[in-house]
Amino acid sequence: MTRISAFLLLLLLVAPGARATMVQDQWFKVLLDGRKIGQFLSQREIRDERVFTSQHLDIELDRAGTRVAMSSTETSEETIDGRPLAFTNVSQMTGNEARVEGTLDGDRLRVRFRNAGEWQERESDWPVGALLPEGLRLAAERRPLLSGQQDRQLSFMPSSLAAVEITSRVGATETVSLPGGRERLHRVEQSFAFPGTAIRSTAWVDEHNRIRKLSTPMLGVELVMLECDKACATAANQPSDVFERTLIVSPRALRRSELQSGLRYTFKARDRGVLKLDDTAEQTVVHKGGQLIVEVRRDARPGVGLPPEPSDRAANDWLQSDAPEVANLAREAAGDSVGDAARMQRLETFVRGYITNKNLGVGYASALEVVRDPQGDCTEHAVLLAALGRSLGIATRVVDGLAYAPGFAGVDQVFVPHAWVQAWVDGRWQSYDAALSGFDAGHIAFSAGDGDPWRFYHALDLLGRMQLKKIEALR
Image 1: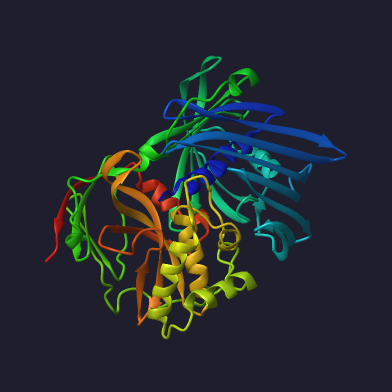
Image 2: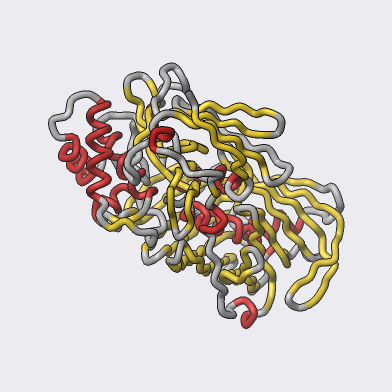
């Protein structure tokens, strides 16, 4: 019951944001809410008229008493003038490794990646104008460090095989405290544009456009990277339970009868920002006087939301519904049930029993990985259920949000980050939760997607900013 996997993946994106201004070797220590959680190293080398860039990130976090370690190593090859040639990304999370290798032939990108222990290949067009580290570094060098100066660059992220637009705006110079002392640096505001949301960060750069400090709001606290020497960067990490940032305390205990019927939630932002949620077939959202009023009923309403698109029934890298192992399991789970409603109910019950090792130690597994190794938390239950549904021709989506728990990780009456599934059944999107005892009014939806963890940034922006003021039973 957590979205920590998306949080960890976001670290992989924001930390290498420093790559736009790398020097030969550059060490950073990584802090979350002032506590050291890891280190980041950037290296650059020129050989045979080629620029080779390497970036390595190591972090450790506590997850409700479980230590989660993650590392990512990304290398790239470019021409002297910043034209992309090749890249590799290797990410490890709690023992699971993902590897992506890409080469460019003109405007065509050939990718080889390992998914669920098997190598797969594909080709696509290279995003027009997308840059890798050296190209971004050269673009940053050309940007004048004048207050108000703004530019946009398209950064290709090998770990997600996607291009992200980064907008940078130069601000005033400020005195910044670094491990080596205080320095006058230029403030640069950055915005990473993702589907449905934007992740904002602030960089402080010197006169050579070299990043010395990077800060990103996350879960209501700050993720900070500070340049320092190797000894400083590789010093011992400090315990930091990110799960504490994601729990929302309930004003009161919720009765089973309320959960089986409907509830009205009143939220208020902890900061001056605006909280935004969307309506679903089970959820209505109203903004009123700076507050967010969310009403959730267990039963879905017809005629709410757009009907499914072809992609909601298609296989992808996280929901491998066309894999023989997934298809066979779906047929076994559905048995002789007739109709999509009965099939989804049967699948929900099957997944709940199939994943016997329920733990927080898995970072984020795909459906095929769960079929082969049935363990994990809510995300593994959700991706498997969604893939099984798609294998039977049922449109499904993976939902990210909050779920009520009477007790979790030693805390009573809390809402925890959670994932479940929506399926298009009887002309409406209906929710199914295999990780808990089914969907009820204790679920608050943030967003829905195709199972790709990179799509969960909206939730990361909301978590840590929401304060639950009141809960009322609906009649």
